[in-house]
Length: 424
Image: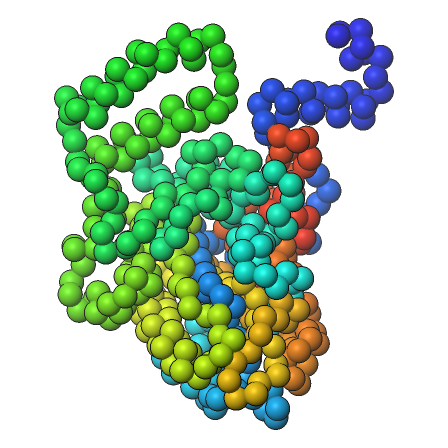
């Protein structure tokens, strides 16, 4: 083996070592071509690393950009009129409360993708990778754990609310997977604060005794990851920070302000979690798949989002947390401009997203769609560039890719560059 290694030229030797490391340990960090526009720390904008936490609001089903953040006239116009905002752009009258805090937001009207089917589109938006064979790709919470380490000694670094955690750690260790909260009002079910002599501690001691010999004989990263998971769970159960998951500590007026529904309470939980040290929180809201009865269905789902989002932004700002918290509004895709008075079909080639706080420019619109909202007209932003931009704001040095277990180097955003114009 030593003679074989010496016989290889320098690039081949390096590749050989990298692949050995990938096979043995699953992941490694290797140098990569520069991704940021700047070459040095001094040249990076002040927004790099400004977002100490990220709240990702996922609108499941496909938000109609024309009926929300990119209103149009003519035959594309939907049932809602355009209204002025506190910034120099318009939204539709489905979002009157958002209009009052638009001067704290950054709207991207030039998003584009190529997947128009719900499940793979959700996967694509969460990971910036298309589903490929058996490999699972990480979301931004897992990438944050990889690049930045744990965000808290006791709390998880990543949490998802109103959904399962099946799209999370990807090819990273299971400890990078988000903690799933099904009902934000219930917090973490079946967990009590325990002492050192609790039944849980005794059970964990028994488990460690039973599998100690197996762990010594087989140094498997999967086994070690699950042992780490148990250790983290026990630490959390003993932690005083567990109270961050309990919304009963919030004043009634605060809970009402966010909205008495799973999305509103999820946004309130997200604020509590990031203020306690959780780096990445996703809150999902379903109900945005409006093939028919768009006016009626938007009239139901939009007010829920409008109230929760506006309260979240004002709450973070009032607590001095908005500058260090990046709030992301993401969706699967847009909706087709053609409107027959009933609904709109899926439309991935042009749609809108939104950022607020965390170094994003305030009261700013980036990109432009054409007059009908069918195609991107200026400054297209891919899903990969969207992810790279958020990672940039969070301070991840995505110039250094991770090597997947298959030996392939992978980066946040699948090699796309961050859109620096989104940040001040």
